[in-house]
Length: 417
Image (cartoon, rainbow, N blue to C red; front, side, top):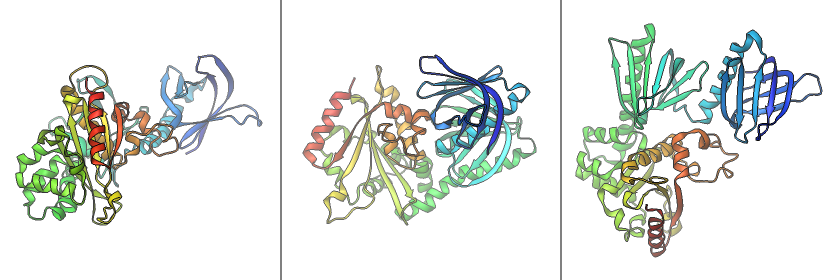
């Protein structure tokens, strides 16, 4: 995509002082746009969408604010303003879909309809007309002149179809509600495809992962487990015990097999309570018949939640291959009762790991280290990831048992309210 419009543009610096005001053009590319004055010698300035913190329109102007607090205003487009706005949003939304990891799996089908999005408190966020793209594991909603957003199926808590009003409702794990309507003649096809995609996740997890590991358990038991552990989300040991106590024992054995993880944290009393332990298992797409195994601990009395991903390649003859990293996060940032915010923190960790394919770097590394990584924009714009990173306390290498126990207890003491 490359289109241009004649206009006037202004640029202000971080102190809001006007430094450019000229006639020229804007050239829109796939990942940004160039502002260029009149004349062959004016090379202009390229602004990448990844550098934009804010983007909005007001009356007959379009405003961009960068992360370095530079401000650009596009003016005097005339009767082409609406089309300019559509073209900029089209390019920006294509960028957002990739930069925020919205596409999960192959594109299955595309619809057009209306959407309405509400916060967990029932407060309207936005609404409008949009393209609705259904991928294997996510729904991407792309409005014409608003930012695209997505729903990852693994974090759908509840969904229903209202046959009378031709309305589809989704409630996510974080409490947000999305309503889809005005699908016209495509409503029944949409309903059929959504049921197929949402139901297919459990079958895939059972057939591709759980049946190969827990062969001694009935498919019905594994299906109940898969419903709780969609996409490899960490599920509390208590929840697994409610499904089947023998399954809970086998899950724990599988998570920790070939590692000395439990030995190294054996002295941590808070890690021994079933209600504090969560396990997750996912298919490892990088290895044939491989699995991602991870554990999370919640310690609200110390204001801490932490996780470890088990080593993928363990050699009995190489002790270093058993060394595990452990990442610690405060449950709340300022004041309050950590127990009340525990569910939110668990959700943040689950979302970060699953949506970003279990990559640990964006969960804790400084943004300067990620400057040239594919996570550059995601760490700035994905709400759950921003909150998680802000609450990061420490990363430990679980190497020497005595040192590990000492350092973990120090983190507990430092982090508690």
